[in-house]
Image (cartoon, rainbow over all chains, first blue to last red; front, top):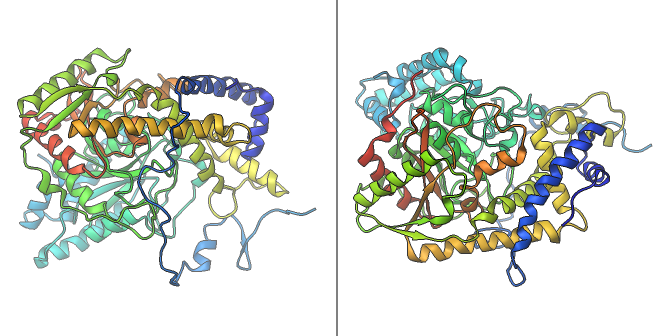
Length: 96
Length: 486
């Protein structure tokens, strides 16, 4: 594991749909670097034959019956939206 | 004693005997809130009017002589990360500053089914990310035992309002210690049930493989009653487990003769507060006097838990928090004229610093080229941490540890250094990663008058064992009866 660079911080910010000014990029580079150094402690562990745990319970492929149920009223759901029009969520322009 | 000071089970007897009404009780709690909330600031939203209406509904049942559930007419506070239909649910974040859910979480529905009175929504670290409640976008909650200190977190509001008698009980959520740590620091009982024991439907997601809802109460009997009310399988949460739900009060026998208790040597870490260490050792001796056998055990991967947690939890959070995009609910940055720009501006302004830090950390750990080194490595370390507990529970019934390595710290003391704040959870994250049930009970005060918590852990779905050990300890010692001077 390597310490993170300002360029990587900018790349990750873009992936996460966040934007930062230069000062914030510098601060994140420093802080994330320290946290990642600490996390590097895990390299002390030999995990060659250890299976990963993604879920603590022995649950697999929980399925439910394919029954139709009434859902929330469209108007109620759209009511929480910052902007809605004619039954749709409204967003800024997507395509040039 | 004023009504607001009593426990739910004491109040239930009085309500049933018609010595008091829920309306009087609710008014008593409201008066208490009016008197001390200015000092504590444990609530984000108060629902006094609807609370009094719910109290009147409960009173009709009591007056008719109906068989009323144990939490009927009892004023309960709910952490602001749990959805309440028609009541603002902010998660302590600006990005949900105007979010009024169109539905109730399953636990909220279950409290309504009991006929409980919902008194308000409590303050928290934004999206439950923090250990001091200082990451709230709204206010700094104070510890009722010392107003210069933090109440712990992330469910700091839920812990503080119970400690300050501003609610009889409350609900919180625990991802890496967010119920147990604030319970310890505020001198109340707090329980994280086994992962899957309580439905997460309507709990705003932070780290889905770790999050679990649980109660804060003034004693262990109330904790069992709250767990009875909220646990059980829910078709709306596919990770909730379809197992029978026992009456947890039946486990409270005040008899732990022969109970095998393990005390892990790795939990008495370097840099631990010496008063915490000695108070916890005294508590362990008290359990021995009650008839338990005490043995030292080893959980060798304990020191890797924080590193593992700070890969897994932020990774899951980065995925869960992708939904806050300014489209369907919450805040939107208005002036962007293109979609991606709108996402970026909305998220950068709507989220606080710690949330952004964790989204960044999680996105990095999951990004191309780093997945194996971080996320997969973390999941493998998680297996090792879980196996430590599996092995330990072959030899002992429960594990007893300090809940937090220090008592409540000063407001502002750890905000400058995120890593230092993360280490506050060093004794609670290992069991969270293993999905185990855990409870924190008050076990004494420091010389400075700050509460210390005793953590008890059991194998999955063995809540009954730790509830009884905690109950027996409580009956034997009475630390839970100490109250802050407010």
